[in-house]
Length: 248
Image (cartoon, rainbow, N blue to C red; front, side, top):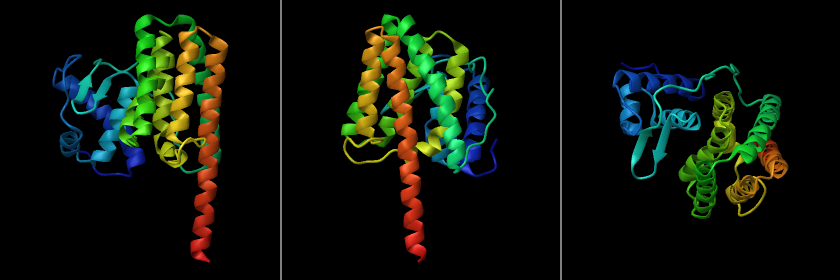
């Protein structure tokens, strides 16, 4: 039971679907642990990196929860209601990334607003823990843990709305931006777009949700995603200049 190796940007969503099938075929229940990413890669005939991206997609949708040092756990056995309703292919085209960021900004500003209005103690705890985890992992320069915590943060806000369509939309749009995230995320201290700066924005959004301040939560999310896109644009220009210098 293997898949042909393809370009990973096209494959990881297919792998995510196969993991959902494997959960059903194995009769796994919430709380059960999946095989490791390496084992899943061998089972599906793809690289560990592709499996990791697929797991991130399923983590955003609330189906899986990766736990560092422990494994990957099943949280639910069926995908959100609207899973896959956005059928878009995003590649290295800045115009497409801009359109996706505009959509994500509109979407996540509303989820942040609704989360602030509807937050429960349990939902707030998940959001605050994820926000703090992004800051801790940024300080420790642990990119894998940062990505896990970042995914949990945005998914937690969407889940706090109580609207599965919003959760599914957020899951889809974040999965489309995984590849762009590596380009946009710098590594230098607290510069805009750096993990530290991103984590600080997470903490500010979490505080606004804690305070029930819907306007501040929405504005914080708007600034957060705008920073992401601006960092992406700057890094693309830097790489283009580097390529031209190398060729000349």
